Image (cartoon, rainbow, N blue to C red; front, side, top):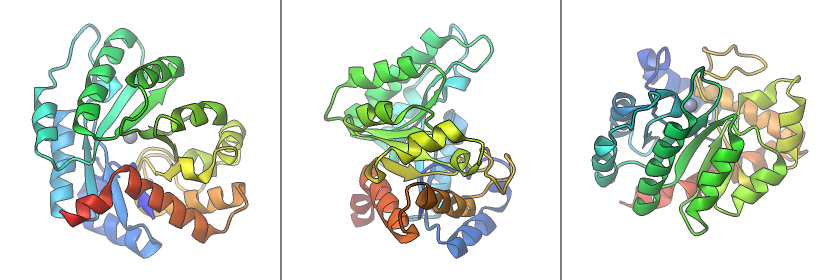
Length: 260
Ligand SMILES: [Zn+2]
């Protein structure tokens, strides 16, 4: 299995990365994408990828929650990091309307600028969309078809919206929320989304599952996500694992990575 979204450089995971990776491996999770939220966490993600080649992969970018109202972030460090050729994605980037006093226009400018850098470099993006789904769709559609696509991380949109974005190369990140029996709306949306449009993620340590509280999640909990998805779509677990792993490897071009 491939965990397309785990914050290995964040506490508490960073305090025992070797243990976290070993528990994941025992559970059958062998690949990890570590996203970032600003410059220093982007450097930390890259550092982890260098220490665990072929297993941990890094994304870099500025998360909407790290955009100060009225400010335009300096992205020169991101331009240099992309040019280094070691990133497999740009992210997490996007819009977050849940932040009190959020400057959504400023977030959108930063989102567009980073998505543009990713597209120029042929890198997929990891999209954080909380509220403001219309704005996210507007930005992604304005990039046009034929781009490198990306992941809609913890996506709460309908299957119809996911299908519209799938045509632009965006896959739905399915994570801990679906494991909770009360998540009826998201479960229905995920069940109606084709398996080819899905990748698995934990957002470890943050998004809780039915059996593990938020803040304590690890990539090994991806198994619970995969098992829930298999039940929801009435598909053998093996098929869910094989297909979602292949989707992730294709999206992040990992077979090309391995050949380098
Ligand atoms: Zn995240």
